[in-house]
Image 1: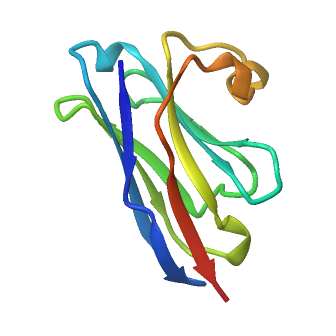
Image 2: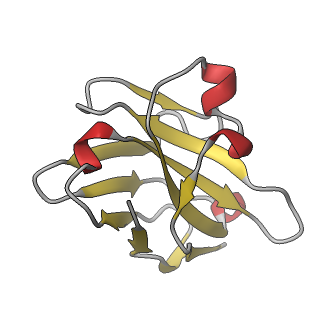
Length: 126
């Protein structure tokens, strides 16, 4: 599967933005999908993940209650709805895919994801 992220941009603090990640290939529905982000000068970090059917999701504590991950398997797309944005949410956001679920610790590890999109920049101004 190949991934293409989009939807980034400049938004004021408190605003909202929705990221999309379009996947190529007919096996999208068999992949667990995730979003990660990398702020300037920092390591890439886990944001959220969603299971094949969308029935199970998990979020980093820093975004819980503000971000919502969802997927539309008919459109081969995963979304990240970001609300109540803060300046510290500024980062390049990446979508990623892996073939199976695992422990939360593993799912939060950058190295456990095999397929990555190119990233989309989100800038939150104060």
